[in-house]
Image (cartoon, rainbow, N blue to C red; front, side, top):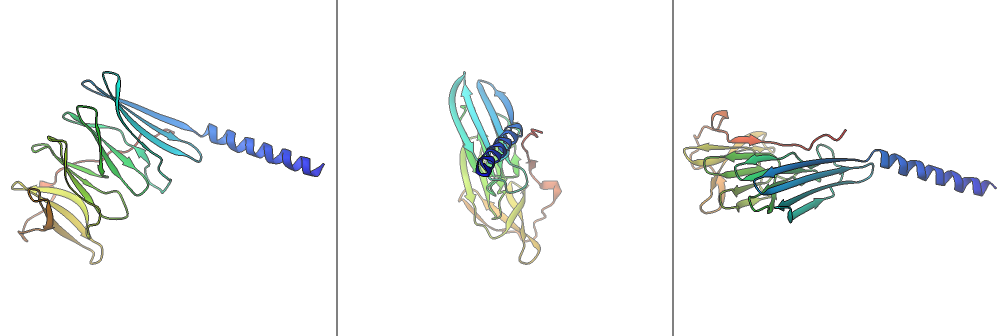
Length: 220
């Protein structure tokens, strides 16, 4: 008899756990329109499971999609709200210590690059991104040609912002071994990234690129 009671008790506890999980499950659904491109973003948040999906359609025909199942590691999780940049829509995937910037172009194709904080030079249609990760990294993307120019996920100093001075591009980086800031320069024509040639260059808020940081909608 005690054995049967134990089984019944275990069964009731299991039902309570499942019921609680189902009650705590929520879905955030966002939809965006960019000419003939329709974009949907869904973040599923449950008690023990998380999933994010972005899908694109052109004239109601499915074109592209990406799915993520990030683990709970603290901070923001899921796919952010979208921001339109000309004929592109920009999203950020948070979580897993592996931030990604998701770029949807006018054809509905999704490009996933190293991401986190996004900085854009609208005059030249260049997008610079930091990497939301324990490691340091960045990417440079040409929006006018839908082309990744440069990406590194193993740099020594973490980029914190990107700047433009006299048509040259720089990254203000943090050296955590010496607790100082260092300046790195981009040589995009050759795909190089190294110490700034002009050591006296002034990097400050007056020449910082426009920053676009987006986060997922709250589903509470």
